[in-house]
Length: 282
Length: 211
Image (cartoon, rainbow over all chains, first blue to last red):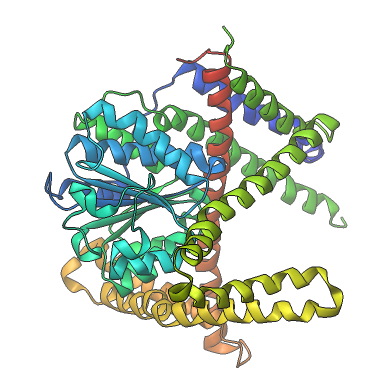
């Protein structure tokens, strides 16, 4: 019983140290725990698979900032690789001011891997202020929101944008975001303009979006680092890329830290009940 | 072994400075925190100027004032926020707040009812009565339906929770607890992922221990 009492008084820095070890050791040792893509990751992947190559484009909105990079940047990169590997045209935009640099950097790195040409295979529209207004403007005519791309080139002079007017010409919209802007995509692009919406979100916010999946308002969802790892795994499994997985490497550490925290919760609860029992008058 | 890129060194030192807070509050951490706040604010201001004000206000006004002068109306309404710093006229900031609230509510209330209430109710009813789903599919549908009803009953405060309502509300609490548990699990994964991202950066880009 003394053990649990001592445990409840332990300096929290020991817990930080254990968590740090639970992250560092799996990263260094590459444990290679089994990987199985989740249902909703697979649904989003299959939604992209169903789009015909060299036809209508997928729209990806990279609405994330550097603070969310570990979870969302691998997702974005994996989706871009998937689209470009299958010759699915890609429109990339962002509603987060800091997302523009991250998305542009990823496109610059990935496009040469597949010999993708700017304007023919993908376009980058850049950042636009006013989330809901931008989403609705695209529903009317994408040229209202983005008369030019991120580099000032008129949209109409980009070959792949010639037949793209609004969501009716975009078979899939994917929002990768660490904020509630996913709601705006579902509400305005999905409900109002009948666009097919998928999303990638931080694990913290994912519980908010499961009701949209169950009610069929989202075609799929990538949930945090696990979702990113799933997409990277599927890309590799189908032979779309051989680039080492970034999120996949972190999943061993996620699993070990989760086990550690579950252990803490069990011990904490036992300690709580023991302390409660000891406090009762005999 | 270590990176030769000075920017990587700066990022690594800042990361370690922030992590040093876990041991205890210290000036090293405070420097990093203040740098972060200052840079974020500066970056946000520059972005707002370059991506919002210049293309949406100044460029159209200078290009064709005769046609675009109505843009001055929202610009002036927005400028009223400055009166936040003038106590005598601080009440004027209520005008842009009211415009923003009215616009936001007007745009989102109807579609939000559609996506968050009507579609969810339709889905709950459809899943619970979808006999063709059979077996587990139907069972999960019925369980979800019971969860929706009992959770809603917990938030029904117009009657004292007694009798059948008490039973229903108690079951609703269990569903809520399951929801909170799932949220907590996801929160842990999210926070751990951020830590992993930083540790990966330190081990990969800075120390080059992982390739």
